[in-house]
Length: 405
Image 1 (cartoon, rainbow, N blue to C red):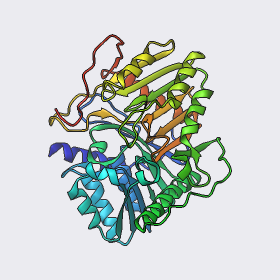
Image 2: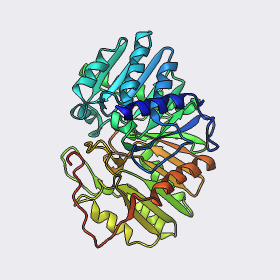
Image 3: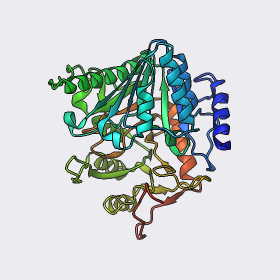
Image 4: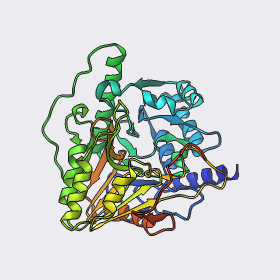
């Protein structure tokens, strides 16, 4: 396919750029990584795409690669196909690979992809039923290489996330944050072993509350966070509570509803209360969500936000790819926030109940003017572009069906 060849060449070109060297917004220990959906007018030439970054991480691995993911899906000739080839090469040269997958993600995973992963030499794949721990899922998308580098972002281990979905992540070499991500993986890997042996899963040892300065990781659910990792359900409202002028947010999904194991949607006001409180004290809120966020239960809450002073809500609809309809693609999936030009947030959670309270998710907070500015510019590119439209409170929106044309 010509598209595949073009993408591969673009990826190889990206490898020639050293991490953190190609952008003036870079901060020590962190590289912003962004998926620009093909066949759109969007462009971020100063930011590398995840395919080349993942390949570089796998090629540089010396002893160990740890991967935590919701699900895994490949497509022949895709960028992900090349990524897996490099993961295979790492296993063949003796790198130990641990791949942790969510049990509920098996339904989204491709059997052929899982078979290919299991066949990689030195790779051990475990499936964790996270619901048995907390009622949630492993929704985090991350990897750690040699305990020295990590990747955290909205990108699932899915070919579409590397080509056809708007995604944002971070390559991390900051020793403190990498250590925190490694501790999360080790905690969940051990939990899977305990559940597999029908043994109790011990809670992590409680420690002192981590500092909220500089750059740091927060995660959920709090009760299964290793010592030194903060609670994202506490930190997000706290950051919103500190906002003074403007907050820019981009998400797949937003609603004060909770997706519980019993399929009900009880009211979950933790985030929504903080957003409304910020708007009430004069903070400008610019919330941008995907066109998957317009179902009959979630849409009224978006409309109730849009009528408030200081709040603007936009819905983003990406055009279909030239190759035709692709199920569960062509959507914005980034989970980012920028506050007052000083704080940047890049994570894996949608802003709904069930994510920050019960599910495994990771979020990186960076108190950096440079990174906050670049995250704000990513937001503005969509916000001011041709794909975002202001939510009309009196308009009818179609029920989303992302899996069917």
